Length: 313
Image 1 (cartoon, rainbow, N blue to C red):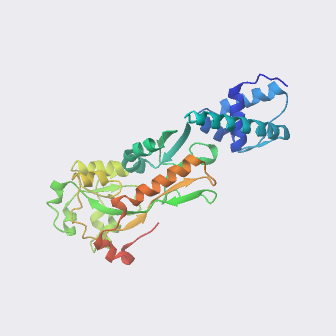
Image 2: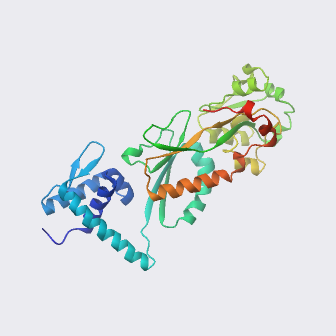
Image 3: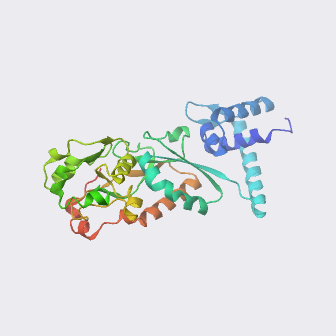
């Protein structure tokens, strides 16, 4: 057997052996799956034996692969321990995917704190309406919009608390809205993906649902919130997504929170069972941040009517 084997190929083999997937190994090593596959095939040609049995979604070690995996695991673990003694930590990549509005309005502004607390992680955040394919290694974890994308049964999920859906508008417009009935003469902004529509909110508060038929429509909550800040009209959206605008006074609840605003569980963190340690760190941080989020706490008026006014997905 050759004694001079390429370290990059051995590292790719070790990662694939640990994770049982070329794609997951590529994610961990910041390579493409084809690069990992190429390196492992080159290693197999070099030593003259097959190391993996390839499947459509997973790979399994051959007997020769298991013997080599024991050796590489010990070698790389020993190297990591030796470097740790000199204060050198191996950097790991954490790829996070998220629904767009959650990423833009809530997660991204807080992510600097997570990165600062985890200097050994290279964090990659991406966002799109469709969930990431975790089995194919597109991300290590995903924050999904539950009404449209309930998690598959083979994935673990952590619900990310209730969100209050309330009317929000610029202060200048709020001064012209003394009671909810005044919404009949206002421009109502619609968020197309929201499960709570204006007709729902109006009926809940004893008003004619037909008032909510017209008005501009946006396919993302952060766009509807931006339009409300600019004075286009009244948005009906998550106060979690508008927390900065509310804190800075650029948006207000025109009826001073006296209305019956539903609270719903809209988002969940989804990940594969037995997640890698960086995912566990991110999950713990996310849960702590949500617990400290003022938008997640019921106000006194809502708490009194909680059993009557809570809607769930």
